[in-house]
Image 1: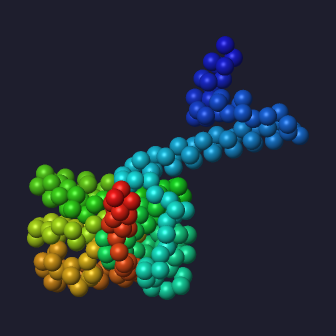
Image 2: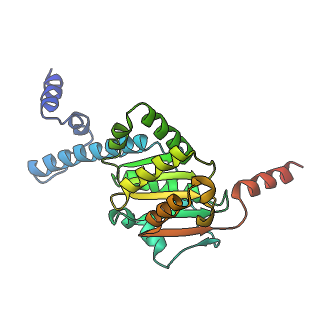
Image 3: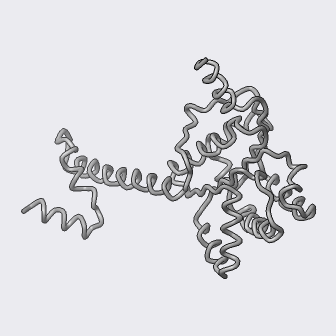
Length: 247
């Protein structure tokens, strides 16, 4: 009976996790105030963990990656000695800077982008992951259905956007212009991580219009950390090693 009353009171006070915490809090305190503080801290911690889980789910990051098992191999060219710290501390997000990972497929670009995205959600930073071809297709759909402005508003609270696989598929003129407009809206308002297998000089193959390409690159590389990934594909190397082992 008392537990029902407690649950009802906690519900009214929006302390929904507190009843579950009572049994986990020991009585080894000097005062009732300390016990209450511990109970309220437990409520806050539960809320934070649920928020982190919600932010990660909303981010749409395809696979949970961690920086703990990420290999900063010697063929990742960093623009300056502080780049790694600026990325892993997430200070680049607070400063609304971008990160562009360019280079050979299978060398860890997407892994690093996803790991940073996951870390951002755990720091309670709202994040979104999009594969660029899917984003452009979605933009074209929203434009045709007169819902583009509503779609843009869905990024209002987002602070980090991960755009994966820039350059894998050429865009239509309409798609390229819509993507340019969206990135222009985000310019100096949000942080963007982009992965691409193409050097900037080859982005004309994707965007077709040289002037639009130049304007887009200009916005992306301003306040950006540009990392160059070289070497052999990890996926290819692992596949070949498995084949060799099976023989």
